[in-house]
Structures are given as C-alpha cells and as structure tokens.
Image (cartoon, rainbow, N blue to C red; front, side, top):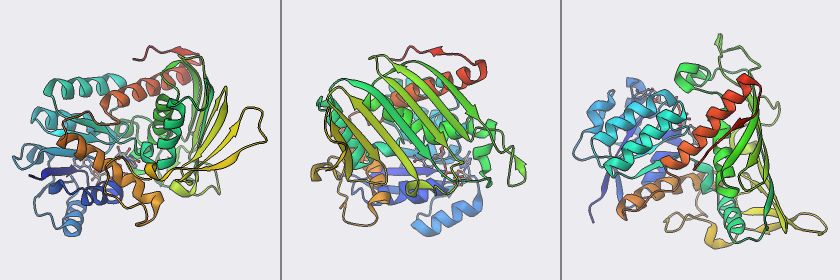
Length: 360
Ligand SMILES: NC(=O)c1ccc[n+]([C@@H]2O[C@H](COP(=O)([O-])OP(=O)(O)OC[C@H]3O[C@@H](n4cnc5c(N)ncnc54)[C@H](O)[C@@H]3O)[C@@H](O)[C@H]2O)c1
C-alpha cells in the first residue's frame, strides 16, 4: 500500500500538539513537507520531525507531486487562500477551525472542495473525546428522549496575557467566539440539530494585551432556539480567574431530554453523568470500551495522557477517509454551519436583536 504524503502548513502550537503526533500514529501517512512563514519555527519543526523539505511559502508546498494531502494550521485569515491553492492543486485538505473569516468564505471553500472531488475536513477536535462520542450515540438512540435543552459552558483563566494574532480582528475574525465557542456550537449541531434563531452578546474586557491593542471578544453568550423546538444557552469566557486553562479548565455540556439528562465534561474523557426522569439525581456512567478510540484508529487509549491523546484520532479520520474515498467527519459543511451561527452571533450582538437562521 502506498503511503499518503502529507504537507503541513503552519508549524506552531497546534501542529506540535495535535497534528504531528496524530500523523505519527497513522501507518498510511508520511509527512513529506513542512511550511511556516517564520523561518525559525520552520527550522524547529524540521529538526523535530527530520522532514527535510520545507518552505516559508505555501505556494511551493501545495503543488508538490509527493504531497496528496495538506493540513492547514495557520491563523484564521490565511485558511481560505491556502485551502483554495491546495484544492486547485487537487490535494485533500484538513483545515483548522474556524474554517474561515465568515460563512460566505467558508461556503466558497466547501464548494471548491466538492467540485474538485477532494476530501475536506475541519478540526472540531472535541468531537473526538470518547465521552462526547458516547453522548452523541445515546442521543441518536433516543435514550434521552426528545431534547428540551442544550447547555454549554467553557470557562478558562487567560487573564490579560498577550494572545498574538488571536487578539487582532483582521487575523482572527472573532475572539472567544471563534476560538472556543465554535467547538461548542458544533456540539450543539451534533447533539440537537440546526439553530433556528438566536440572540447573543460579546464582550471585550481587556482593550490591551501584552502592551498591544486587543480588538476582540473575551466573553460570548448565546441564547438559542433550535429547529426541533429545543432551547440552548451557550457561554464561553477567557476571564474566569482561577479556573486554569485548556483541559484543566471547565468544558461542560448538559442535555435535558424528556426521558433523561446527560452531562459531559472534557476533563472526564471516559464518563458521563446521567439522571432519569423522576430519578434521585445524576449518577456516573462509564463510557463503554468500544468508544475509547475512534472507529478503526490504531491508538492505544492506555498510552499517554488520554486528555491529550484523543486528539490524535483526528488525523486518523482524515487519512482513513482519503484511503477509503469517503467523506470526513467533521467536514467543511459542518464548518459552514458553525460559521453561519458565528456570523449571526456577531450580528445579534451588534444590532441588539434576535437573528433568524436558515441552516441546512
Ligand atoms: N482544533 C483545536 O482544538 C485548535 C486548538 C488550537 C488552535 N487551533 C487553530 O489552529 C490554527 C493555528 O493555531 P495555533 O495555536 O497553532 O497558532 P500559532 O500561532 O501557534 O501557529 C501558527 C503558525 O502559522 C504560521 N503562519 C502564519 N501565517 C502563515 C502563512 N501564510 N503560511 C505559513 N505559515 C504561516 C506562523 O508563523 C505560526 O508558526 C488557528 O486557526 C487556531 O484557531 C485549533
């Protein structure tokens, strides 16, 4: 079996944390080229991986004959031009979230990928948490009954530290909304279905971070109605002092249905809390072993910190979809739906009103 040549564009934080270790577990994939516009970051990645081929220009990398697939892990404003160049060269694309700067740009990327017949995937990484996969399974099986309420809360302590490109509107688009809440909007689509309307607010507390202007939201909240009649409350903040960061901080989802409720915490990767209608309260439910890795993934869940290693299944899903010529999960269409909700959130917050949505 020929291995699939992968190029990575953007060799910063998420490439080192998720993409390279994930690809290392894929027997079918080989990283053949690296790109970063910063020569020092590129050199560090080359030394770390032993991959000789590198460039500071993505145009050099996407056209290479030994590259079949591209992973895009650069600031948000660069996703669309890099993805279009890769798609035009006939390459499969895994692009980080948020896919684009707005829904129109995201939809163009999805159209281009469909027309070119390439595999397309976006990195809603928390879909790969075993407990989230089990929760989605229980919802699909009807164990919770009809869903009344969706609730999510993402609270981290980032204080007033420098966020680099993440605090600049023309590079990031939105702040906490795209950075953190986009994943939880995706959970809502996975667990409940399409949004029908929403009203939202965005708040920037720190106008300056690291001595430079900070232009984007530190906090976001959405009140939503879903098309199936359920309601939703979504909140995400960088300013929950003392809550810590990343997987050591709060990432909570609760679903209330006519038969049962279920609660998911990212930090509890292999358990849910569940309670039945009229029952005594919530109890811990273990996630069955068959959900501990993504279907087909060679990853051993006993290897490494499971709060880090579930992310590696994302690379497996991309490579397996290319190998088997099937759609990736989640794909650019999922990203367009999320970006449509993000656009509506920004509009609602600036106009101070409910915004209707017409999602596929
Ligand atoms: N899925 C997740 O859980 C998750 C987590 C973190 C970040 N992300 C996303 O990943 C992307 C990157 O985030 P990060 O934290 O790794 O950022 P980062 O700043 O650590 O790394 C980005 C890298 O891209 C390089 N770069 C910038 N413009 C470029 C260009 N035109 N061509 C080539 N390289 C370029 C930079 O030099 C930098 O090394 C963002 O879209 C972010 O939202 C997703």
